[in-house]
Image (cartoon, rainbow, N blue to C red; front, side, top):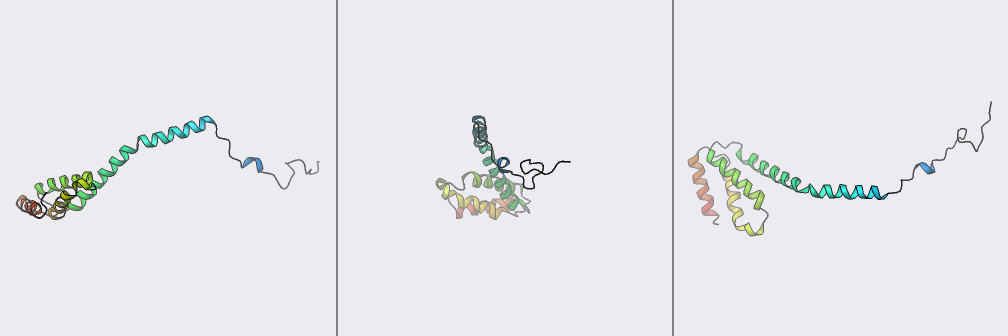
Length: 129
C-alpha cells in the first residue's frame, strides 16, 4: 500500500485549479467569427424593424376594429393605422396626424357605412390637411 504524497495530486487534499479557470486566448479565427456575427445582426436588423411596424399596425387595428361593423370604417381604420405607423413620428406630417388619429378613435364602433362617412367628414372638418 502506498502512503499519501504531498507532491502527487491524486493523494493531495487540496487540488490546485489555477490552470483550469483561465480563458483561452482569442485567436484570429475567434475574432473573425465575432465580426461575422456582428455583421449578421446588423444585416438582419431591417426585418426586425419591419416586424415591429407590422406589430404596431396590428395593435392599432385591434384596438379600433373590435366592435366596428361598417366595412367602410374597417377599411379606413386600417388605412389610418398604416399611415400612423409609417408617418406618425415624422415632423413633416405633423399637420396630418390629427386627422388619422381622429379616424382611428372615432370610427371605432361604427355600425354602418353612413355613420362612418359622417365621422370621416367630421374628422376632415376638425383636422384640415
